[in-house]
Image 1 (tube, helix red, strand yellow):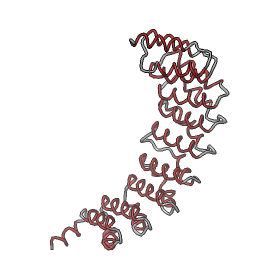
Image 2 (cartoon, helix red, strand yellow):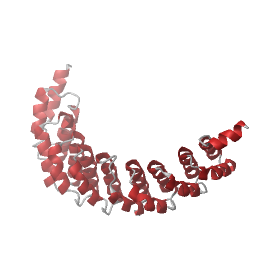
Image 3 (cartoon, helix red, strand yellow):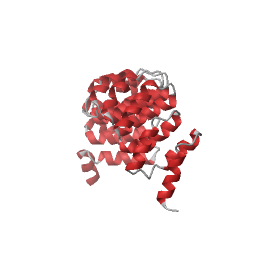
Length: 290
């Protein structure tokens, strides 16, 4: 059987009274989209069943057709079906459709967590910097997954410019958000967050403390030396190791003796990191030469 006959069989199923058959037929055309098929699929966006519509939207998303974009915006705005709305937001983000930015802004308080999370993701992918103010509002969302996605998208839109509102996220109830906030603050070198990072360095979760050491390392300067020296006594070997590595980069003589002390650390990796850090200290190099 030729591929054209195969296609015709699938196209005939698009008129089947069972919506499941129509949806499967649409998916069957995913890798067979020529100009004729595309026109047929664009018409399927009018199908009365929203799951057939969804299959069509997913199948057509790489085409970035104007009719598809308009249909996605309409569904995001008007559909009462949560799955349809969040998929609409997701696909608009995948397409990178700037025309959709206003409707995405209007959905940051949608009743559905999935919709809000995918709205935040789409806003980041579209890359319109005026959207940052909307993402900042989403930092107050009651769902941690939405807040986390908002931080991720803020970092995409502003990878180097400090966003001071992120500082509050260092106190978030969710450990993953506290950790992510510390990392983003580090990437943007937000010096206004210094005192808050000192507090985060005592967080009960070691991953948050590890991320905080990363942030302090990125901010740099002699004022991070004392906090990092204290971190050499952390209960987590990963925190101790990263603190030692950061101190080695700074090369402040104040840290030399504390680094010498952790050459006796119980963890082999920490000891190796301390040795490498001390190689940046001239006095230590001279002693080894002697």
